Length: 112
Image (cartoon, rainbow, N blue to C red):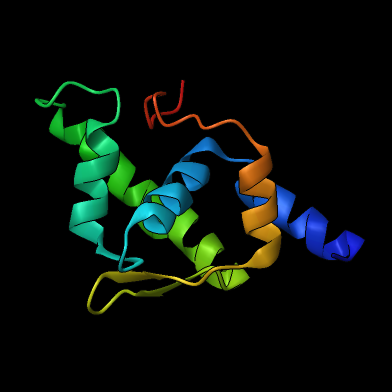
């Protein structure tokens, strides 16, 4: 893997939320989910089931305007805003970096 490709992969997975999104998609046998299902899965991670709706709204905004576009631009997902379907596209560089990192799924998907 070239240095620039490694750097891009490291930047992509440097964010805990993006790592959780990638691992969630990677672990799904179909590699596909909807935005609503992803929100359900991620907002329950370490958060009480009765999570405050503004927190879910904030997470939705982060996904739509930051994390999903970055993952899409890198080519590791296909995200159609019209149908809100997210499809995982394995990337060797990202896979290598993810596999080298400890799993952090037990941590809440929220900014401190």
